Image (cartoon, rainbow, N blue to C red; front, top):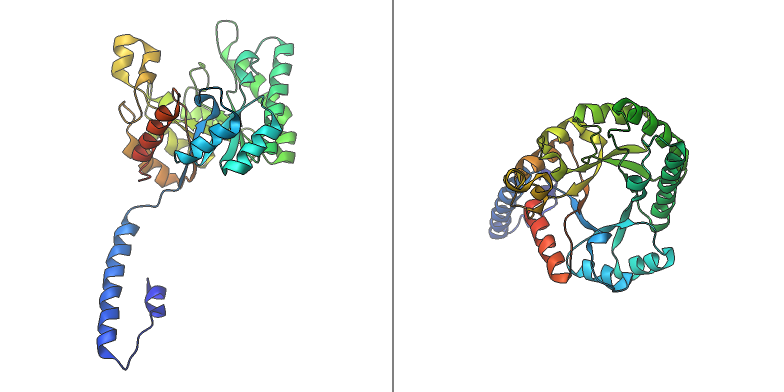
Length: 305
């Protein structure tokens, strides 16, 4: 503010003009102080490409998302590189990352080495796709624990496989971001933080899903513990009431802003860790009207308006 005041043109020969400039300075100072009291939040708003329904060409879908106020999209693979790049360039929509959907069918935690090998190749393909699109991350569900795959085996196997992909991630400068999901694995923010740190690599981090935590925890607590490990955010809602009346997965039917996620607390925690970057909706998609509603809801809960 001092620099701003020093730069104001003041005609010292004209007392009246000086008085007006001083009054303007007071007004500006009050306005700036009010703005400074509220931490600036810089979220870039996106959706998962799979949320955009219909058979329209990728370009038309990208243009629609841009018109609806989205800054970018998290692309799935496989897709035609040339078509995606043309859509990106002509629409102005950023492809900020790629979702590795292979991880569910060929998890890196699988007992069968051949399945793990396919999962690793899927991860590497996603890394190359992200690089081609100009993205910065690949979203990965690191593994699944079940009756056949023990927790400790999943921990060891997934780290071994991910380490095999790190040289490529470093070469491409695309980070691998682990999403917290209902996979019966990495169930605590302390454990997830440790899991990430054990790689001793800047090429891995957290793709933190806000809504996925609400069933068994509080997102703001996870955010503070994960801190700078959070690379990007998935934005979704969850209702414990719907869970209790209709089953666990029914909780995700809550619309953004109408569930049990304490968004002011989430935003406060994000401010505390200094997070800025991509927040990507991961909810039920649909047509233009549905996506417009999602855009408005994201603006409201992320305080973008």
